[in-house]
Length: 517
Image (spheres, rainbow, N blue to C red):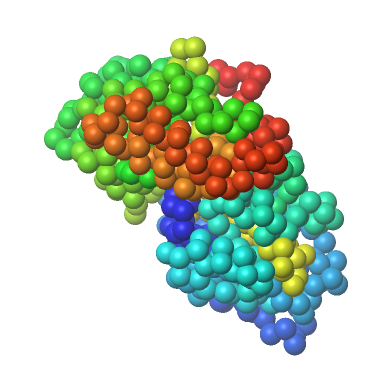
């Protein structure tokens, strides 16, 4: 997920795996079963949750894909849970699931196999996509939310978990054997836990990466691209971007996303994290306006002359269109570009992309940034929290998430067993780099006010990149604004709503780990 309230942007329930599966779902005898009828044999349902039925036919043909699983069946929750036990506990019960309004019909189709497996009836609660946050928050504050479960932008975890709006899931995860150890730490901790308690199951597990056009790079190098050594540092990326800028008419050296608000924040966090930047100290005081934060902003300013036209107004949609349209020689963006660029229906640069390892910064650290993404949660007022948990475990299971990646729909898996699957690597050229990157990920803390914080920082950074104010002034302004936001959300008053010590392990998961090469 790339926007704060747009669940349709990368929705599993509207396109990709579920969209491709809709015909299969509707063609089977267990689609949207009558709850008065006997339920089908679970294995029959599970056998149809397969590459052959879920992955688009043209993509299967493109990569000569067999029906062999793109996941580890021993780690795939839907293949290990006891569905008869689920039915014994839940058959005939209901779960109300909040979903973006545009996704309502496709969600109903996609949830049919879950209903057939569990005996749970899922009622969808459509919410207008552009008002999701406000609507959800108002229902939480009322104390009587009209839904049991929802999926949302992961930085909102602090806003919803700290005040007690979400149900703890630790007990359900243990009881039903959710494979939490299969998630990379960055997603498990930042999309799942607040103050040491589990409130979410990771859904769309984003990380930012660097992508290059193979043909242009091979011309510079005189040979193949080495993913680790061809652009070893950000200084080298600057040189490459300068050399490739306008290598052809309409081609820019590097793609930057620097529109006001969270877009600019994400690009700055990406670069500043390599210099060692952290947003807060152990007392939740903003410290990102130090020399490390400045180094990241200065890096943006040095890359800017060779970037896409209009980069200061570009968000993810504009960046994606430019990159897949062949207008960028290199690009700093999300992992989905690695897969989508290889799909002829989405891209004009098929077979001309290599996703490389994050360039290093001398004296810094290797910290690919986990920014954006979404998570799946149960409300504290749920009438059926266990059933809601089971539904979310189904939606986020390894097999479905692996097939999302094969469908190049942008819904990103966060499982080790998926990102290290050799068959999936055959249809997703950046998968090995992605998997290695997740072990060393940097992430912002999930605190109340996280979204306004991202907005405030990005607005100031944007002012700096367009030349309205000096870089140091931008970060100083942002630090003051962030402290005010934190104070308004209960920090610095003697009992912080989020404990720093419990949060710290997820902020940088690469500490003490050896680099991939």
